Image 1: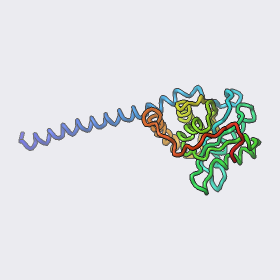
Image 2: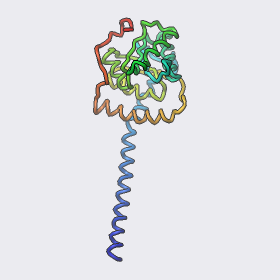
Image 3: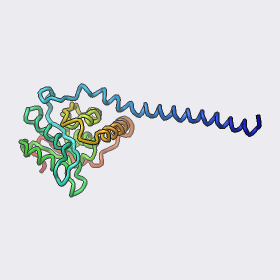
Image 4: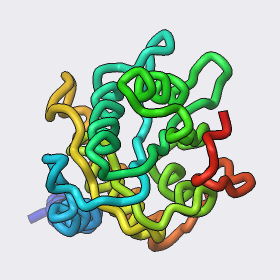
Length: 228
């Protein structure tokens, strides 16, 4: 066998070994990357409720924001608000904390959420607003640090509840979840994929990086009338 052919075979051999090693490394990264999400999904299933009468009472329901269009909640967000109203009317909570995005003057999730809750029968002074809940981590962090919430019912869709519960409980809130709305609003595969990635990020933020929310601010006495 010629020297050139032996050299070519040697490169093929090591190239195959490198490809196998890269594939193994990718598999290990995927497994370890998925573990936080799998742990969260498993650990908090017994804290998720679908029936109002079964939910343990708490002082406040934390309602997570989602998109609004022309100042009106999208169906996903409207279902979250309506679910929280059910909890209030059933005496499971004494007040609601709406937490969402008001990063621009022309975009305000929480005011739209409050407007709907009041229209559905919740007194305005029983609704508090967190205008800086830009993401779930910020909402949970601020609920504890700014609003002083120690125990709560989290209200959002089922796909979102494991991460919300993981964050809230990890950040010092004794939280259970109440599942709002339906399982699919269209494009659910996208939401599920995004949530899987967000669970990994949330695990690292809680256990490794410990970031502060984008905004903190002065504490708010949630037992006083709503600041509006």
